[in-house]
Length: 266
Image 1 (tube, rainbow, N blue to C red):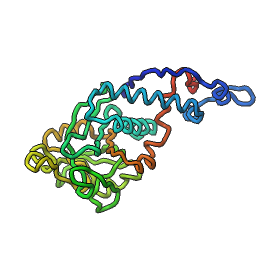
Image 2 (image 1 turned 120 degrees about the horizontal axis):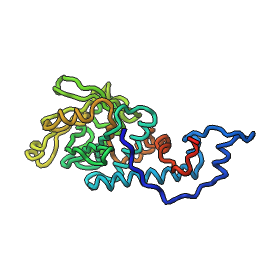
Image 3 (image 1 turned 135 degrees about the vertical axis):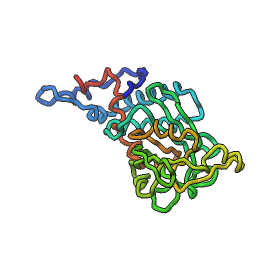
Image 4 (image 1 turned 30 degrees about the vertical axis):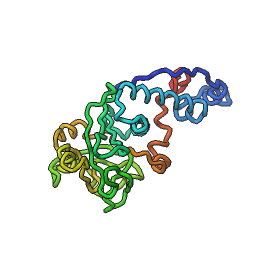
């Protein structure tokens, strides 16, 4: 895993008495302090949150491409680090973000190398036929809904079927847990190409809920992201943000506790 690029926060004040009460028992003997213990102290939580926000902004500035919104990237990194901390992400060097706040006529899937903080590939991507027309507005995890599903996925294995080459993805939360039973996979499609856009008044075709990609370079995309990378479908849904476990757990902040406050390894 590549070391993340950190920018130190400008906040150095810490409530020493609160940390001391965590670090020592009533008998005066030192006790092991975990990162999760530290995050239960509000002052440390806010310092870690500020450190993470510094990190996310630094990645966004390195990417230097406004085609990807900061909100999509920040949420993607939040879930990515929660997946990492829970040992649910076999491959950590890449994150793929699909931004369904953008129209299907625009490139809205971004593969980001977190070792270099660069977008290594971008493309158009189709959404579900019942999610909307030019824009995806409606999302579902239900069988036969023919809608796209929001949230965090982990890519798995490839197979050959009716789509020729396809890549399986495991839905990791309430909003996409039925992905496998619904047959939601990443595949290429003739209705998800730049040529289709040109021939259909800049309107992309739609799938039954799969994130469908252009045929061109599809094998290369699959090779990049298969077998354990983070795949995130973003939309600015308040309901999803409230209920997503990967956006609301604090695990991701454990690596962002400022070093001068981190007693866990002392």
